Image (cartoon, rainbow, N blue to C red):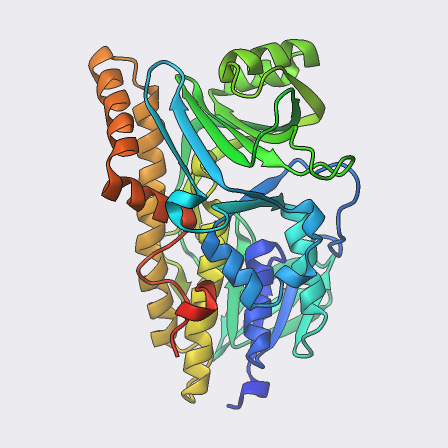
Length: 414
């Protein structure tokens, strides 16, 4: 079967599904994205509540795939420093771009902004069709292909990809367990203003009830002004419900008590939103002629902001393995290619998930010996060169098995 005859259907047009579609279509493969949401549009005005931090690896994925050029860079905030501390102790870890030997440690942008950029990039690829506002009612395996019920149409796919989120129906149709686990946390997201500039520093404070991240945000009203941050406040459901119900002045007071004088006086800007925090890890990322990526395969605690980056790497590795199979004359759903995808991604994602669970549990411990050990460990990490460099590498998204598209051009393998 030739390249043009093979058909890949991706259910879900979010950030991971969109990137996979772009990477596959750039290889000449015929791809259809089935997205239940309306066509993405570039955001305007105030920053959207749902934002993501991009690692160096994700940045190069977007650069090398042509998606970065579709972004409105006035709505992208780079950050060149990170600071993490324990509210109840003296432990702190901090580092900057100079320590890492890079210009930026990461970039912050709205989820809707990235999806819109992927949609715009997709429009330039002739073998890619992105259908918006469609309902996928079911999928079943018949013979050598998947038959996907989409409204009145039945589409056939040689490879079906589930990029449809934590409650993936594709995962359900494939009979793959989702492995859900309640973390005991809800998360509140909001935009705040600060008296002092954020200085391009991403901050996180660990508290008994959960972590609070303060992420540097762009200012559209005054470009260059560094007095807005996006916050992600994770904690016990009752605590988060109280914070969400508090009137703005009281909410600001609670926030001030949590962060101290790190950014001076703080105040709420706009609305708040709350969502439950669950962990998920699919029992398998693949089945016959099928693969799962992003939240359909795994969901981790947002305390380190790595969820979207793991999903983007899923997309890049799957695209790499599929493209290699097709170039070698094998089908796009080649079992060996899908197995290699799972082998390269599942273990790495599981390690990150367990690490985030461990951090959450460690900082919830109130016993004095454990608190002393925790703070001593943070100070040691901050002072120990090799260990600190390891943590910096993790923050940048560097790994031993990065897909080619996630590497800087000078490092990409021939």
